[in-house]
Length: 156
Image (cartoon, rainbow, N blue to C red; front, side, top):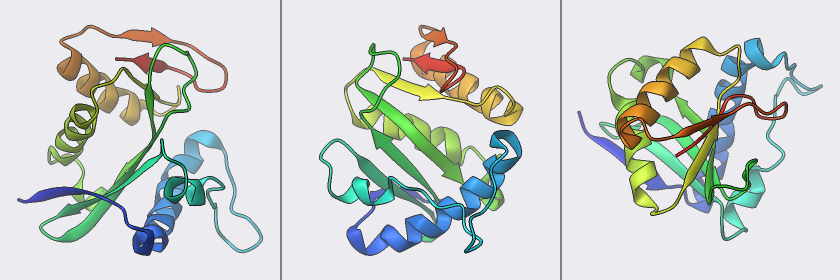
């Protein structure tokens, strides 16, 4: 299995937008969100990832097939970190195969900074996933903060 994490080019913005719809659909059960009048969830900050310096869009491929995306930015909640994993999505077909873990570790290792990420309190699968990732990556040296805007925030 060959996993590639590539910076998303401007030409891949529509691919990222399509994947975001699947991602937001998955999260709608925890965030209680609805589609708009066009039947889409949308993502109002998507364009920013191709024009602002401290935003980094990535496309994940497995054996040359699109398998997910990661969006990284510098908009943190705690003020104790440099970058934030804003969105992280692996298509269901590719989950529970170690791909998410490899992608997360690769993204975290790509930048020599202090990281922050958040997980919805109701997203039990996400909490288990990120706890495993963060504990493994930091050797259990991280901080958890509860915040009403971004609950269960982890600083690593």
